[in-house]
Length: 218
Ligand SMILES: Nc1ncnc2c1ncn2[C@@H]1O[C@H](COP(=O)(O)OP(=O)(O)OP(=O)(O)O)[C@@H](O)[C@H]1O
Ligand SMILES: [Mg+2]
Image (cartoon, rainbow, N blue to C red; front, side, top):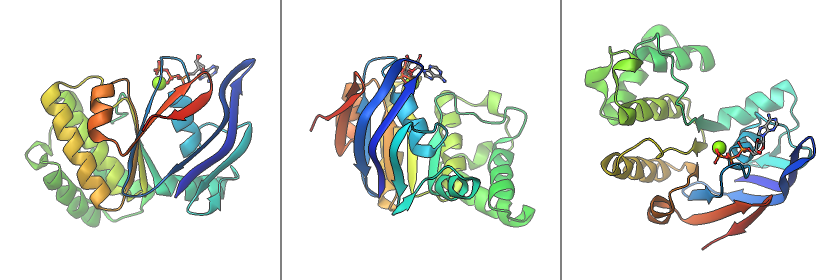
C-alpha cells in the first residue's frame, strides 16, 4: 500500500496540503480532481518524494520515507511518474529512451535492455516506431513511450499528472485500456485530471482536492 498520513505542505504562507491522509492499493485506479492551483501536482510530487512534506508521513509497503538518499532511492524504485510533458529525451530514439533508463537505473547490459525494450514496445504497439525520434511521434504515441519507459523500471505504483489533457477521445479510450492492463499486472494507479467524464469511466476511487483538504467523491 502507498499511504500518506496527516501530511502538510506549505510554500511560504500558502498552505497547499492541510493534514491529508490517503491510501492507495495495488489493482486500484484512483483519480484526484480539483481546481487549478489547488495542489494536485504538489501532492503527486510529495507521494514520489520530489517534494518534502513539512509534517506527516509518506509510507510505501510499510517503509516510511525519511528523505535520506537510501530511503529516497528505495521509495522511487517502487513508484513511477508520468509527467504531463512526458519528459522524454528528444535527442534519443524511441528504443533508446527505454534502454537508457534500463541501463542507468536497472544497470542492465545493452543486449538485455534491448530485449526488454522491444518486448515493451510490442506491448504498447510501438515496435514499428522504435527508431523514430520523439519529435516524430503523435501525442498518444509519446504518452505510450513515457508509460513504457516508466513500466520498464517495474514500479508498484504509477502516478499520472493530467494524462488526458492533450489527447483526443479515441486516444483517451486507449489510455483507459492501458490503465486497466496495468492494474491487472498488480500495479496501483493514481491519476490527476480535470476531466470528470474520464475520471468516472476509469476510477475505482475519485477524490477532490480543494482548499488543502481531500474529499472522497464515491
Ligand atoms: N516550488 C514552489 N514554490 C512556491 N509555490 C509553489 C511551488 N510549487 C507550487 N506552488 C504553488 O502551490 C500551489 C499548488 O500548485 P500545484 O502545481 O500543486 O497546483 P495544481 O493543482 O497541480 O494546479 P494545475 O491544475 O494548474 O496544474 C500553487 O498556488 C502554486 O503556485
Ligand atoms: Mg498541476
